Length: 132
Image 1 (cartoon, rainbow, N blue to C red):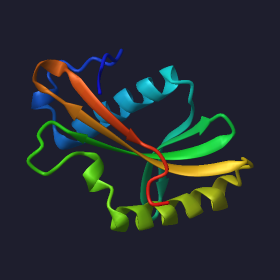
Image 2 (cartoon, one colour):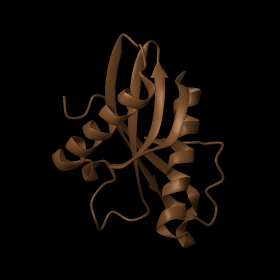
Image 3 (tube, one colour):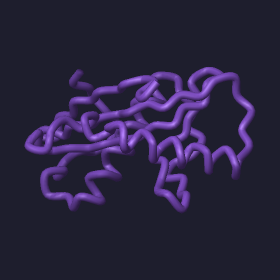
Image 4 (spheres, helix red, strand yellow):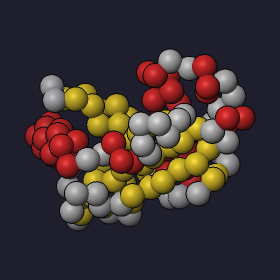
């Protein structure tokens, strides 16, 4: 779905890959917050990698992998969250539990794809419970 976001997307076509990824995470956090999620952490680092967003959806602890694209040449953003990536994310989630010891009734892994189109328009895909 194409959405409106409070995040400034002007000039996204000239951003470095890292800055484009940061922009995508900002967009995802903005949309999730407006949808009622409570963002607990961003860019939680483990020795295995980084969890982009940790949030609460009600009493469910949600780990969100954000992928951002400005071209579909490499496929859609959420296609990048394949079974190998899901396994790696589960390892990082385990590290999060060891460090933070959260107490929540449910846990979920989501993928959030952000496609930044020319002119700054944004198309997003939010897949809940990937790899389940």
